[in-house]
Structures are given as structure tokens and as C-alpha cells.
Image 1 (cartoon, helix red, strand yellow):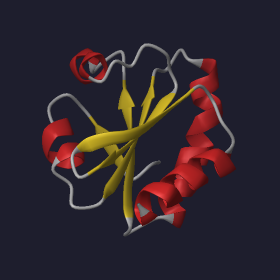
Image 2 (cartoon, one colour):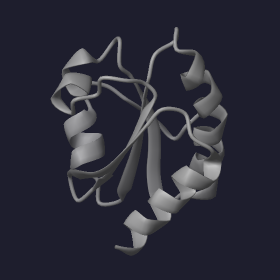
Image 3 (tube, one colour):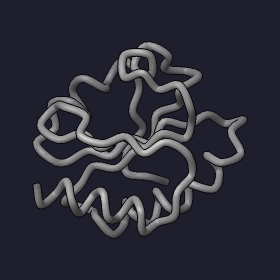
Length: 108
């Protein structure tokens, strides 16, 4: 399982107020491409443990947060730095794409 489960209730504190880089995978149980992304997100959570908070947000159950950030398609993997989204990767991508964007956000 990924590091964290984000919800409408904890998003402000756990994602926006985090002192670490945060990666949120917006997904839903019925979404086929989301199922392809899940193992990649879990691998990344292990690789970046202690450096980046990586978790999932069920967009069907947490419509307020998904709506606030304009998530229209899932999977969307959003990178949040200092409380602000810096990148949104829409659609299923390979692990290397996510790693590149996380590394770029960590450096920048």
C-alpha cells in the first residue's frame, strides 16, 4: 500500500501543510488505468520513503478535493510542494515519468 490515504478531511493537513514533497494519486476503484498505476505508486512510496509523502485519494469518495484541484480524468498524479500543486500527470504513465517529475520537484 502507498504511504498514505488522503481524504477531503485530511488533505489540508497531510498534503498542503506537509514539510515534505507530496505525491497524490487521484484514482477510483472502477478505473482500469488506475489499477496499472497502483503498483508503480507503491514502488515509488518505498523508494522515496522518508523524503516524499506518497499516497492515494479516491476521487469518487473525496469529490471536494478532486473538484478543488480540477481533476477531470483519472488517474491523475499530482505533485505538491510547499502547499501548491507544481505538476499534474494525467493518464497512466510509466514509472520513469513519475520518477523524473518527482526528482525535478525535489531539486527545484
